[in-house]
Length: 353
Image 1: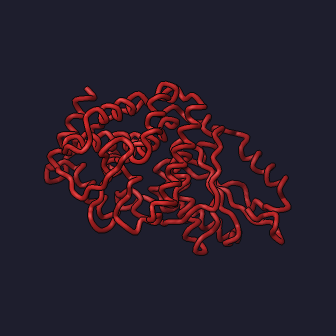
Image 2: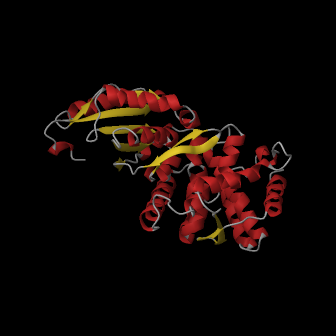
Image 3: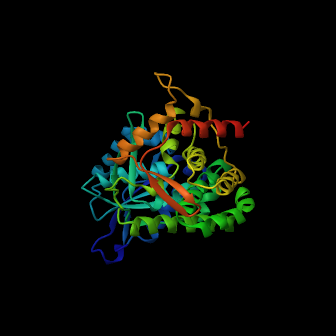
């Protein structure tokens, strides 16, 4: 940051996830002390603004308005900082507010979950849910800075500690077979949240995501391919169908399982690799079936299949779904055989019995 070179202290507005504040009762006081020590370069314009996390934050347009009203009230400008401290959903909401005010306020992310530290915190996307669809409203706006503090993960419940693991499995599957081997090697340690293994997973997962964004040639997704959304077409539909009772991490684990079985069904991925991926997900603690996979739409068709059309529409242009031809090698396909998808759903159901 260029705060020390500023003629006057740079203003900062902090958005703080309320569950984190409850888990760390002295956090607000510590934040105040930090800004007191650095008063020559930074000015905290008001006490932290507490905001709910999880998908409820992304489902509520009023939260964005509340953040923007504080930006206006405290005269936060393009050389000020909006600092968001929380999980991926809160970072999405705060990032959207920052990106759409003054055509872009400097946004600093301090992700506090395994999922946001490993994946979404280092990305360039901000999204809100609307019209029953995941991330229907959003922006592309790279953060000014991202700070990963592993100590913040100690506040998480086991389910939330595990949630980010699936994004590591995802990116290893499509880009890095060696990393997949490491995840298999560390699976037992990760299952009991051994800190060293978790740190390696988060750091390598974040590196791979950043490398893809920086070198893929399409950081703002002007094309239709989106490899980092491997397993996500079904996951997003599952989240919606469950009214977000199924978390993003759990939904992506099911989505990956569905897509690797489908890839085997069409002769793309050999059975041994499928077994390794499914076994790893289960060793990490993920369940690979949810009843919502069997939901029917108003025409008595499998509702999960409508996720393909929503995915195509969200991407723009033709359908592009990333599948695997080997661990570490993703490939784009532009059509999917619906009976073979349903066969994969039924296999997951039988596996979970």
